[in-house]
Length: 295
Image 1: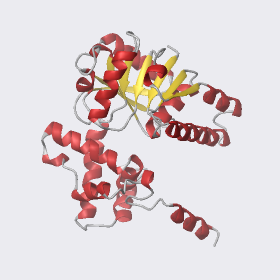
Image 2: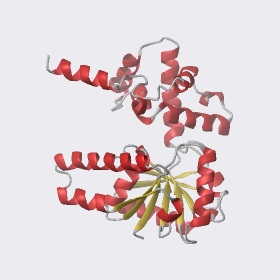
Image 3: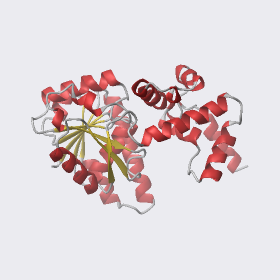
């Protein structure tokens, strides 16, 4: 087990690739866009530089990590020697089903197929393949190189061998695997997303402002980050997708997305990734903060 293919070079994909590469696995990072791959590698390099500056790794270890990653724009080419594929594409059911159908066709018969989905049924994804016993969920937390938790989600047909192997592999990259059952949102997002949604409802109803809501949760509940800031960090589009999956799966109104969240996503205000969400992350705002520091 030395070849790990990662589908998607975005925030989660490049973080997963970074982590496996840092532990001396050969990583094939795959995306349909070369520009996305270039951005992903640049992000990994920047994050490694930060680790070097904090003396958590050496410059040699940084260079070794980068040398362990090879990029591909073809799923077939990037997965031909993979022992494990971790899909980290957009949280969209149709897209994931399409990817897994292709992976099933082009990957070696003994390749384990994992998905980093944060809410979608592993059993449903596995049903798109002819190897449902070899499909499993590996839900990494963001930022992947730092966060220890990995939710391990077993589908209805996932074999004991694949489960045990995935748990053991997770430990080898210095993460803590926690096995959970295959229900919408699993554990992390089933608890987290209603809290974020309720925070948005609180803002929507005019109970308090953004900073006030986050301050209450940070100081009163010892959260390291307020729920609205966290939503920005996750991506408001991702939060909306997860809530929609849970709302559809449980048919319970408590999971219905707040209208404010829906409208913000429609308006393209997705949080950090778009430069604006509940907070302003634009370059002009950053410049303003820097000028205030030196005023």
